[in-house]
Amino acid sequence: MTNKASLKSIAAYIPEQILSNKDLEKLIDTSDEWIQKRTGIKERHIAQDDEKSSDLGTKAAILAVQRANLKPEDIDAIVVASLSPDYFTMPSTACIVASNLGLKNITAFDISAGCAGFIYLLEVARSLIESGAKKNVLIVGAEKTSSVMDYEDRSVCILFGDGAGAAVISKDEGYPILDVHTASDGRYSELLKIDRAKKSSFCSPLAMKMKGNEVFKVAVQMLQNDVVEILAKNKISPDKIDLFIPHQANLRIIKAVQERLNFSDDKCVLTVQKYGNTSAASIPMAMNEAYEQGRLKQGDLILLDAFGGGFVWGSALLYFGGKNFS
Ligand code: COA
Image (tube, rainbow, N blue to C red; front, side, top):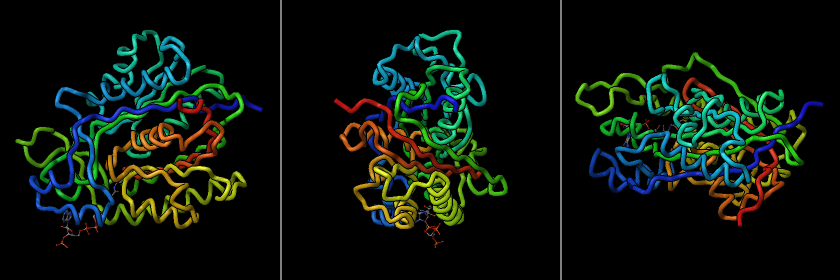
């Protein structure tokens, strides 16, 4: 029997500035009513011009380390997931977060798994712990999605927001990560991507592009199948789940999965209304909100799922190993 890994803490950082649907009405041809009806989103938070993904991630990371009752020097690997990293390919955002925490000589690297970033982070972190390679792995989903957004493209910019979430994964002491499933299908890579922006005048040279309704259909199908499969594989019936904490992309996608599993609203964490889609940060931000509200407690059995550009998707089943919020 291998050593199991456990999620020992959760934390988030949300930038102050709010961009509401009403604000977007002034920028593009859209309406609060249209956005809410199609997505459930009312507003999202946007980082300052001089704030980078690493700055958001560092704030969440510091809190996650504190909540795990550790010091930064106890961390021996940092892995960041971001579709909006500080730099294009290098240096990694993880190296910058490590440096911000005062850490040198530490394993630090980024992964690219779009909006499924946090599930992929869990897969990597639990492998590092269960193999015995590392003792305390800090995982961070950090997103300044506004830096890769074309605010003239109404089909995409209404969906996304900025934020960060972080967690510490260590050896289990009674509340293990039971299973993580990750998957991909690159045949869909053209449907959701970050590519060169159309206009050279646009502030970012890169912009997210998406065929929204095609993404929607595949996302619902993949996510519904994935959660059913991970529960069946682990012989856990949906009524045993204390909290379902899905990636917060779109209220209608979440509701479709929620209905398939017959989860009541009190079992489902929803933050998409306030934050929009914060990609790799969305699950840890939602988990953190449930934690700070006292809805997520030590020992709770939680189900996570996520879907993103690639396509990539996945799910996780775990007992929450953090101490209760005080
Ligand atoms: N405001 C008003 N109208 C808009 C609009 C906006 N922000 N964005 C698109 N429209 C218009 C379109 O131009 C189109 O108009 P037309 O019929 O005159 O051509 C109409 O609304 C319908 O567009 P469509 O793209 O078919 O809408 P939709 O019902 O599929 O909703 C999304 C669009 C993006 C909300 C929806 O497809 C979605 O949520 N997809 C999943 C996206 C997602 O979650 N991606 C991330 C996965 S991690």
